[in-house]
Image (tube, rainbow, N blue to C red; front, side, top):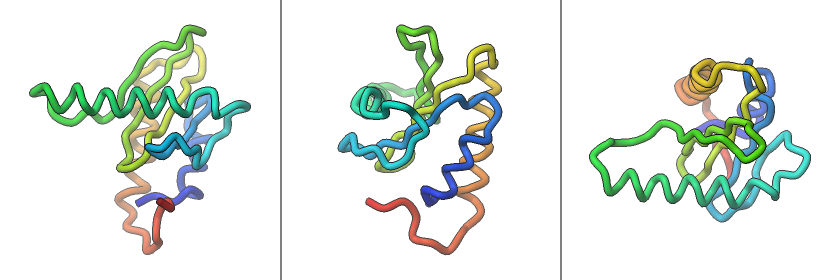
Length: 121
């Protein structure tokens, strides 16, 4: 399981404007936003509801959920166990580029097999 320190690398990922890691109870664990509370419950609610939709369908497990905010900014949500990671895309960056870059970092962190306790509950 990635640590909070590992996830701080998200700020260096091409195409990531901002990020927020939220526990299922809407507690913000990590972010680089000015006002994370504005987004925390929306990210959890979206993630939980998408999981419910997924459970009713034959689509299998989704690796991320993506939508456009009323501001026009793209937001992708990645389920990470008991957490949801919200990624706000940099304007003008191709969505697939952001998804690929974030997925690559997450896979790298997860497969490194670090010997640490991971993100606190």
